[in-house]
Length: 506
Ligand SMILES: Nc1ncnc2c1ncn2[C@@H]1O[C@H](COP(=O)(O)OP(=O)(O)OP(=O)(O)O)[C@@H](O)[C@H]1O
Ligand SMILES: [Mg+2]
Image 1 (cartoon, rainbow, N blue to C red):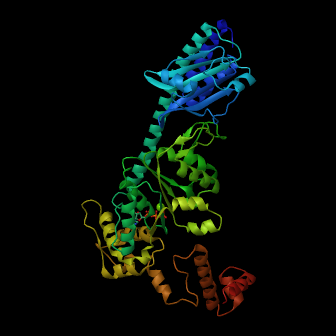
Image 2 (image 1 turned 120 degrees about the vertical axis):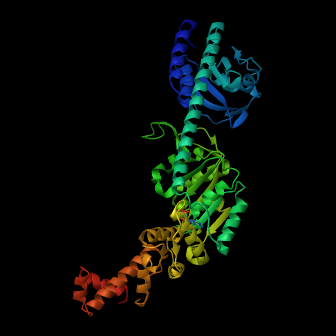
Image 3 (image 1 turned 60 degrees about the vertical axis):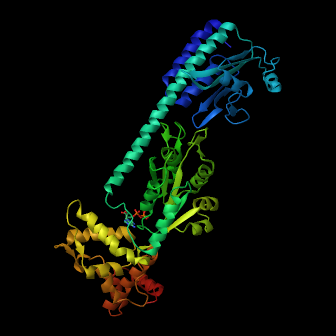
């Protein structure tokens, strides 16, 4: 280590650098690297006590002989080993002859690295023990040097406490922002958040919801688009003991695959190009509450592995971060896909599927629970009337029409159709004429050629093919079988027309 004369100035410089940053990792790095680089310590390490794991010191920074944060001294209970004793007694331990000192047990390691001195100091702020700072050196230290190191440890404590407070405030602010955005979205939907329906299928789903809500169990909501998966996810959170905590939503389909991990788990500053600032992930934001993973089937495979780890260990690592962060989050996932099929096809991890599928809730399509259509229509009309206004009514023919329709977009589509109808309707009664979207299907029904249109809930490709087939058939009919004329009508070549005729067996 430096001679005592230079020590004061050097410590001052390191102290300044560490005090300038509010990022805990920067501060910790500055302290340990500063001791090694500027003070020629052979090794410097810091252990901190974390709120999530009281009574335990976690190795959080290490420079010099090793910068690894795992290994045998990564986790030391307060009171055990010499490091744990420093925290328990709040007294520094300084030994200028570690090879002879019985408090140091790892003699071979000390000898191999030529270490003769160890100085360990408690890191304290007010009455709180933050952790322990330890340095090893290859020559004995003077009384004065040890005294200066003690003063440095006190400065380091302040810098660490500041950085922690800053991180806490930042996390809280972000959490509030996230909650706020979500609440705003929710307010936009006000009036239609209650679950409506009287079918046995819906009653079963509601019963399952009521049973699983009070537990911590992961829930998987499965259903076609617009069947109410998000509505159920919110209801689940509201009925759970976590209702006072945040409900955070992530739409896995809406995030670029390269950013999914950072979005979910956060990242440390400098983790990748563009990571100019630490970012708190959605998982951390949901701490104490519920995380709603929408469209879970779209999660990239690498992120699936990481998610599985968080679900089983209740700990996460930010991208580029070395420390596990404990999180207390209940996960509700939703998908319209058949995940079991995706597992078979190798698109979805089987182990993650089994973890998520602990408690599946099936939301059946609206066409399979038509009894729900009249009460839903009533509820939507009441909500659309707004406060104080008298709701428009749906006449019997229109209601029959609504009840007969297949609703590929399910409840959402019903809502949208009724919203448009209530604007279109000239009187306060909605009739069949106010439901133009549903009418063309009824007309087309009389005029179906052999295969007919694909059902509205069929996959897009099938529906497009059915549409294309009907266009080709129609053109052929109008051209009275003349292929050149039909091709002209369709503005395509005769070869293409013939290919399509063969394809559709026309
Ligand atoms: N049983 C219900 N009672 C009242 N409103 C409902 C019901 N089911 C769905 N809704 C309403 O229908 C709309 C669509 O529901 P939601 O967004 O929950 O569907 P989703 O299954 O998440 O659809 P997607 O897969 O397209 O995201 C919402 O406005 C929701 O409030
Ligand atoms: Mg949804």
